[in-house]
Length: 501
Image (cartoon, rainbow, N blue to C red; front, side, top):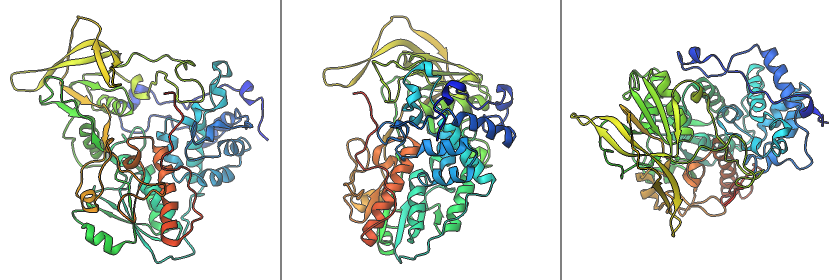
């Protein structure tokens, strides 16, 4: 059994990062590469802080992990040094723990019982333990192709090769179906490939998992836009079921601020995608921050990705702006009581490397030069309110206007939903008011035999939710094709994380 006093004996400890000067000189992952024996010993100590709670909120689908990862079980297995069993237990609920261990913001840690009180020393380092189990699994050859012993004779098309599509494809292939994944880009992975910077997850991590899927029998077609290169009629003729995992890549724009039309003002993905392509060897990026004063509007994950990317490209300065006030460093129990996702200041490794952040401010104008290129921003202090209809309104709180240099402005203010595409029109599928694709309780859209999962269904969300929905839609497709299914279904279509409203 777990050590109930582990959290009293040991403090929470994060993995150590490489020196800032070193990591700004390359695109490698930011964490220090330590000897496996040292790493494993450190992580076993961190796992021993888990008490194996009687009611473990960490793997609650509403407050913690939507995958239902049996976290206390693999924490104890790691504590005892049984990496093989820990790997088996982790992979039983998560197809891609090396992705979530690097990219997930860890709602499981926010829901850990040790998060109730700051005096407990902080939650168990679940994310660190998870990534280490995944890394050890690959190092020790524990990750092997799992090939189906049955052949259903049914064919499934998965449109999109992000985490939701890959999870659905792997589950359906293992159930004995013939699965083909279609990706319109030249390489597989979706946002994992071209949205996530190399310093957060090196793409060799993605490539080795794709190799496993291929060996299991999943087929991949790149450079193919379904609905154009492969018509809807051909899709329907060749496949018995279709899974839409096309993401929610329609970036939210700012159409009201004067000067938006100036050269040098871009959506965030217009910067991140070519930067990631450059890391793949495709040549210099079309939008480069080298020598420029960079202003990033938006305080979330995408903004932080632009921040670290601009710093590595050699920006003269980096400034990230957020309309909301600076959050507290500790959970505010009145605003976000445990175990809901806490409203706290989140500092990413990129923020330790260069630049600065400003809170409770908004750009009121982009100022350009005589050639029509942005050169400055006019900044004013603001607060965010709700009007009588509940709409968000940004209100100035000061007459003072600050003029700051800006040669490159990146809008990282979220996503508006699924891109408009011929495939949806051809299938007769309408988008919701949120820009997403709706479905019934069986994950089936208004088009018979067509299912949806991931960001395309729930809007831009976390990698862990994408995998959970991919696993769940695989169960639904398997049931649709065969009448029953033994595949796990960790979430239901209308499931939402616990939140204060």
